[in-house]
Image (tube, rainbow, N blue to C red; front, side, top):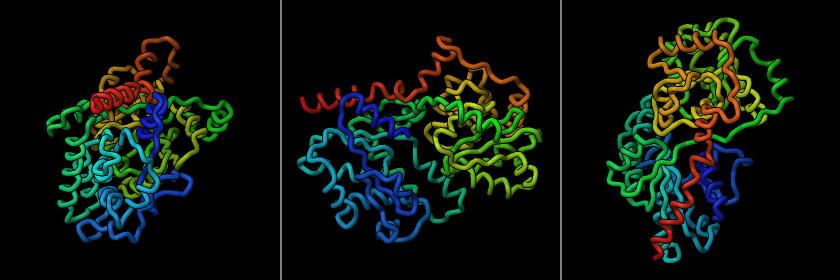
Length: 388
């Protein structure tokens, strides 16, 4: 979502943008693949990390694949334009490709922009630990080395939180700018709202929307102290998105699995029309994110909604300035998290945000078009300086 809106920001400023991704064939359906995206085959020798199979490193190995003559480089060179003014690399994985491209004479004047969505090495370590992966230190070192290289070598480095601006600066990065994550405002269809009102709990309920990214579910049970007993029998925790099957598995493996499963309503991934209706009907949102880097787009969505929000301290990374809103609650441990949920569920529904109100005006800063508004001008200025 961030990259899509970065693309839109450039295009709104008059730039012609060609998106290119390297994707593992096991991870994406044909409908989500772009015309210039590059397949990373399962049988590619570049799938090996230091000569061995290591889980959760397809992102790392994609850079070596994309920048190699025996990998994706010939196809990439055949598909891209003969002139490139800017190469924007979002996350560090394809930085080796950007370097290879700029070493070619025709692209030697290209500006390199690095978008750091989070500090990757600690996040990768957490994923390895949670999945009991062993012998991974060389992979962590490779991630750390790659993102430091990208941050230092880029003409412009972009971070999503002030904490990560500070980290990137401490690495010796010269030109770091803060452009936070945002949201795309949604407008629910009245017919869809009516349909979903019949399918969702009649009593106040809370919503969790997330992807299948491991930090979205590996610590989920711990955030609740292993139990969803803070939800009364008449209420539900409604779960949507590709995280759904993982939440079911995690809560089914708890001591109080019968109780926990009885408090869940699992929706799985939904079309945008249905998801907009569900978000509009939610009494509140939960953000059970115990760790991770960067900032969470779902936090921005929850805050923008005007409904109640219950989150861990980590969930509000990058959005600390919104914690003082009256609808926002922070649970620093399982007891506080459960207490906040019980408190929210007995409250009347939050009043709709009024046009022109101070609270609505504050939330406008959460929109992508506001968060990324200055990016094209930054890049254009740097490009002009480089050409001068």
